[in-house]
Length: 599
Ligand code: ADP
Ligand code: MG
Image 1: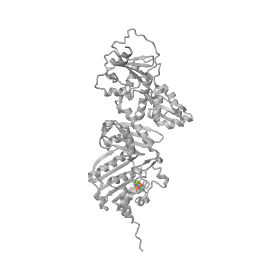
Image 2: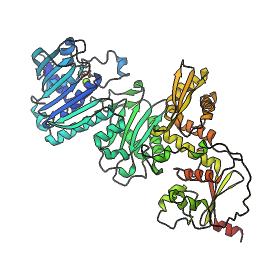
Image 3: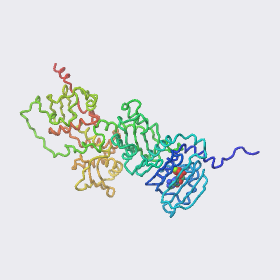
Image 4: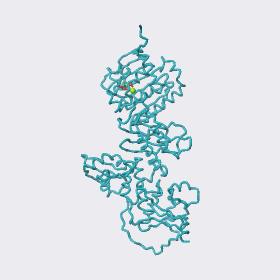
């Protein structure tokens, strides 16, 4: 009896397999660009004709393929990227399945020139439907140039299924964007039907985003940085007011691989809750760095879905990080730190020479005269306009924003801020009076400033005249290696000498130089680890600790410019209600309450 079950010939099984990986021209673009990235190329060119149906060519200056490996490269399950099962769970390359070239070859005509670094000449191979038709030496530079012609020429059903050139081209642009955004460290050129579409030179990720989508994006992005032991999240979210109805600006990259994740998308959406108009979508460019061992990429042939070992935690960290950045940046007036001059202005308290408190009795002082400091600084004070109907359950600044058009605080009233018991600042408003705790208000100012520096990574630094040397003990060395990045993002430039010595070269501009040693010592001290309070992240923890250490304490007499400066800074804060340590910062005493009490 003859058997009815037969092994499929290679060319058919390859065509079937190709269906999984290669759905349309953009899938070829993705696979070829990924191969060029994996080959450590510095320059990658993509050339497309007719939506990729006629030609897809990728030229790179990467490692090239060894002469002996070339024929293997086109065999299914042939890869140079993994060797054993373990490697599957520790992937550092985009490819690993060894089936892209075999799949593409099965359904197209291919021409490839490739030259490995050690080879004198390049190799040329021509294939039709997976069969080699020509092989010779050629004289191409180092790297690889691969051309895919007549995609699906031998699978008519597939070819007919393709959409118009314009639609296929759009898919290709999407793939190109995903890879070029994931790799701002590579130069990319993209030609479509002979016209240059993109010329992206190596840049920071924000600049790459702007080169891809347009320079107006420069002002539309809010930075995010979060470092935890589980994941590092960096990147940008689009300010809510620039969100779009389309979903074209949602990018997650995990270890520089673009991925789709409805789960993480949900985390971002929930952080944006209440900030977007209905029908609008949040925009984001979020780069996750995780231990490759903590993810599984091999759950889908196109490798665009991955599984996180600790997905719930990543969800919460992401949600909190987005909320945090939205919180910090949403109401601070200048969102782009490149342009925010206020951050260049050193905080007056830290620049001042200490003055000894003196008691001066102003015999002419009359709290009811009209000489308040409000009038002096009218022009650049935003907080003078705080309406009198401030409610304690909202933060002041928000009220200020949302009540903008209502009757504002009248500066011609008899208002004069003054310090009470060297501890409180009293601000009379039109129909109420707020009493602010000076220490907590200053903690708030410093906390937001530190966090902003760390999030935007644009802190203003001052060079020290002489590098400051700090010796570390073993405990401190450990803590330092853990939080080095966070400390640097504050604006410190630090060199580590022989592991146990830190050379401080620069510090944040608003940082009192005389306190550097004490503060670094404090941050790195063993207490740091012992603090068990539930801090949101290392950055959060350091911002809180420093704000506590550097804040004006109760009992400190403040001169009127100091009061004014503190209030200006304080009312510019995102959150004015509670201190970084969750204590109320001020109380609001309504005139009506006084009237009632004195009735
Ligand atoms: P994978 O990327 O999963 O390993 P592919 O079929 O995409 O599988 O490629 C097969 C092999 O060919 C790769 O493992 C790599 O060694 C080699 N290769 C493919 N493209 C390039 C390239 N542009 N530069 C250098 N080597 C390449
Ligand atoms: Mg590959």
